[in-house]
Image 1: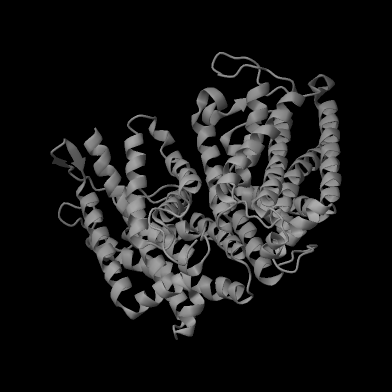
Image 2: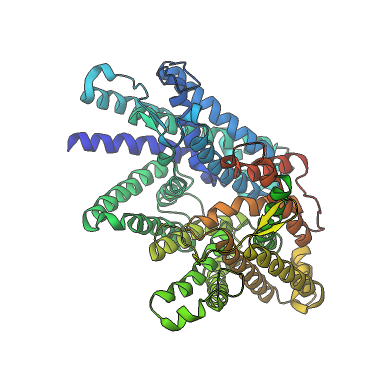
Length: 304
Length: 307
């Protein structure tokens, strides 16, 4: 039980980092990322590809240490964010949504097909995990400590950013872009910076997840993850970093519990339908919050 | 080989064109990127599937399902198409009434509507999955004789019918937009909503008309996709990116642009499949989208009043 709780806390903390990233993009800067899963997957795959031990069938056989691969995953997710950000941020605001949605699907496709790099649909199994020398229990505690430290660091950094001049301009821009532009702020550059930073957090989250479970495969990064992260942010209250973390724990808890519950009640034949029921709940949470309580549960903003 | 790829590209481009028109309407008239548009295709396809599945329980349905001439389907699919269109239009209008209109009236920014459509897309897809299960379906398991055209190019009679139907519908739509009051109103609202309402155009009614036309075209595209490929819950989300790309490449708001772009994208997908593994085909629209956004974000045929 304790070990399960530790597992839950680790995963929820990892997801919280992605939710914090989305909060920076949407809650603070007002940009719509429809492909969260893509950036998470880029982080996860970068860590996996760079740290996998050398085997015949893999193209990249670098076997880099965890910390180096983790840093590299921040770079790749930033690069992907720059690619779509530079293409869209000077255009209509919904073009970013379309392009990020494309990132999500493109990464899924590449993960499935670039077999020498990603292991194809089977994925990469046996990513070396840090602290494995400590045994299963030691690893769980040590990894949880790392994840919680990183989450605390991200939270503190984001809080500081939020209350810095940069954060104030971001929020002002979200409320009224023309006023900001008229005051001489470079709106496109400000948007780009928060979008890239948010995507980097998503990449970090993906890398931490891959390092934790020791495998990556396309099925770990399904489109539903985007919706889950959104639901976490919306339930927690977009705009609030504390809300983002709380929302992640609540929604992930409900998701895990309802999944276990449905798994117990329904025969295996109906598992796909059960998954659909869970997705319907997530979809309802998103749409109903938007209609009935646009500020979310703990949200700071007056309108979604 | 090349001739076959071009013919295949034209045939599947026709279906994408029907879907892309709805996307360009929502970007220009409703003024937001509608992420649930792909799933309206799914709703249409599954509406028709519901009718076709009646053959399992009703002998009357079975008689109606007898294949017509060289095609793989019978009159039953035509009834299914009508049902699919009705269901898709009804859902679009209900969502407009319950979700999009309240949000618009709250003067929410366009991204709120994007957000809503994003959530609704998940809802629609999950409902389809819940009702029909995850496995792909076919409207018909009849075997068709492929026609051998010079080239040598092989086409199914179904594909030719799909192409002809699409061209007919596109011609009808063109007349509707150029000649009918509703069509002209739609173009006015796309160009300048405030001026349109000052000129006495009922914007709310025009928005409803836009949903009706978009959803009907989407359902038709979904059923035609089902006829030539297959019906599965993820079909909508899979088609979404090519449709967005077609609408933007064609120039937002331009119907001929969206149609032409849909054909171009489909041709590019099929021609590039000759030189790269076919499994990378779905990557083509995304790469094209990025190229368009970097090089010519206004699209091939920019329309006044749309940035």
